[in-house]
Length: 285
Image (cartoon, rainbow, N blue to C red):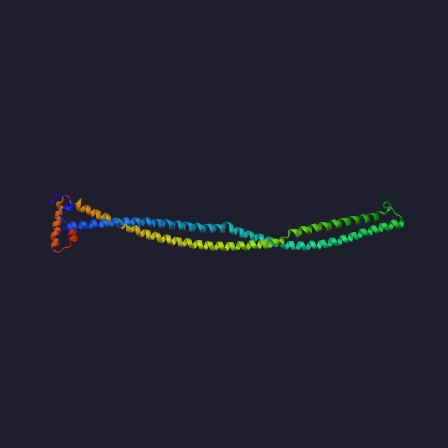
């Protein structure tokens, strides 16, 4: 009777050894399959990292343009609209002011001419009195002195007022607030176009974010399938190792136990029984 617990001492055609050889072959195959699964898992983990990075970038892009609109563009656009409304009002007032300056200038010029004429008339009156009545300036009647002095001062003030109004008109012409309207309108139109462009970029970033999330979900699903395939392979390898240990290392010591199993399998095999099925039945017995 064989006493060595190494299965190699049994005849190669012994059913238990055939079963042993089959399990060993399957075990080697599953080990290679597990190695391949590990490579697949590593590859899918790289793809997952890339998909997560892509999703993060698309989220950052979406948040950037959304924050740009919320914190900058909306405020700038509203501010420009307020400035535009104010400029429109100021330009309207400026037009009215220009018309008023022209009217006042005309009135002052007319007044200056009349005051100048009044001053000339007063001087003529004084000269006439001096030549006719031989009055000296210090002997002129007080009333006439007052008329002459008043006419002279009013003529001087009228001239100064007319000159001042000319300066005001020059300043008003130089200010030229109407030139602000085209600039403000252009700025407003450009901001509206920028906001429209940003809204489009936000919509595209949102779509990219949703697409990236779908792609990540698919990668996670594929990675999960590979991982569970690897888990099943590990289970098969453990089962095969335990089976091999049961046959040749643990339950089969001493070797007489294996010989009895082989004899039982051999007798049943000669009757046409399935070797593996007979082995399992004998094991259960």
